[in-house]
Length: 222
Image (cartoon, rainbow, N blue to C red; front, top):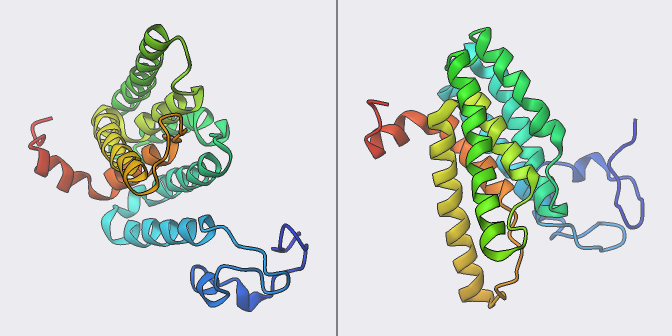
């Protein structure tokens, strides 16, 4: 088993430097041995993981906990890979769809099988349509396959309503983030903003606070 090590100096990281979030601040964001900067992604992902799984216990029914722990794990991996490499691994998106369908069929998700299937289809179809429309208008790719496959997987675990609210939350947060970059850092219009992390965070937010979001938006009848 390979232990955690610095990617530059390859020095094995001591156990007391592996406390989530706290160790990053203790080391001031640098390797103890070669002073290489440690990416802010490390504490950010650790914090997202801590909050997501910490809130899951009191907010999610024990019957669905295992299913959503699997779902959250895939989403958190997606956040990391898309931010760092602009890549969404299909193991955490496309291959997650049949698992969501199976879990819904076994009543291990709070949606029925048909809602899960419809959610996967609608999730894929929405972003596929947006991607094609952008291509016809601009003759260039504005979105990769990974985003539509990820939203399809999200639909398999959350149903049609989950797809719509996830997309709403992701679009709003991505827009605010993009505007902030333009205002504070003057990023150019060609700056590439990965959408996967916003979809993943939107899905986690929906699962944890779906009842509050539905009540807030007046969607209880749906």
